[in-house]
Image 1 (spheres, helix red, strand yellow):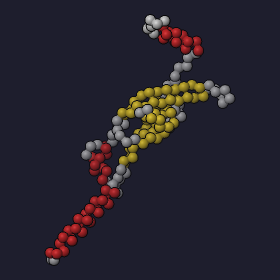
Image 2 (image 1 turned 30 degrees about the vertical axis):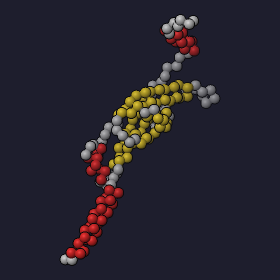
Image 3 (image 1 turned 135 degrees about the vertical axis):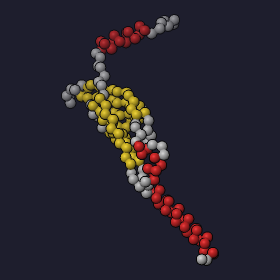
Image 4 (image 1 turned 45 degrees about the horizontal axis):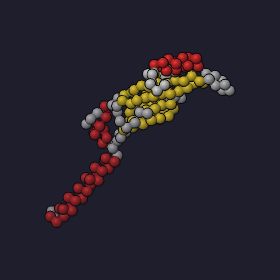
Length: 156
């Protein structure tokens, strides 16, 4: 064995191990996270954490697990195309994403090194209730009732 070639062999072996680790981590898996929001009535505007994401049904990618604020706004034409009359729908609620087993602490490190792509796809379905429509007379009565509740100011 030639002692002069020993540092060169160690350098080549180290470079080979480094290249192997880099290649292994490059082919490592990843996680695709998505939520599909489905509503009744369909076509409602979807807001997650007060950011508009589209009309339902829609699929949204997400980055973290936790509780999300969900707002849904919709309208449905109950009239004719020439003379439309709309019913309006609204819902504000919260939903929590559930962490799958491959995202548990400790397991996620091993899962990210495996050459497998994991998918976490959640489906959230909502029945969006209609907003009660009030007549003009009812709106005026409500306005007068609310005005009577205001404190009297001394300047009038």
